[in-house]
Image 1 (spheres, helix red, strand yellow):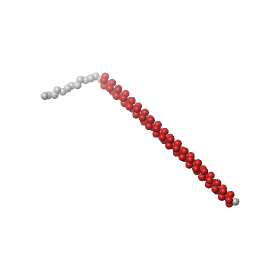
Image 2 (cartoon, one colour):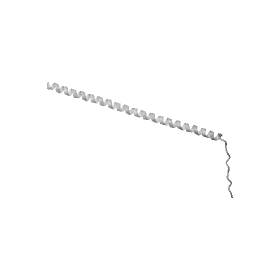
Image 3 (cartoon, helix red, strand yellow):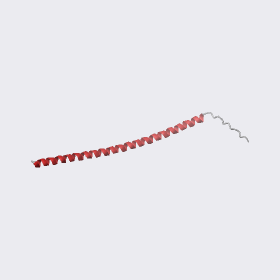
Length: 86
């Protein structure tokens, strides 16, 4: 009778060990998936940052072109030169 109880207790602790081993593997897999997700998000953020910088550069170039066109079409006022007295 005591042998059966001992075997039952041993099987119980074996089952608990297997359960926690499986739980640890699930946690490790989740950790790897979270790391992959973070890397993917970081790559996406980097690409978005680069795209925004390109768009800003394009818009700045267009703004310069508009300013140059506006300055070219503005009436030119002759500069008055001061005569240097000798």
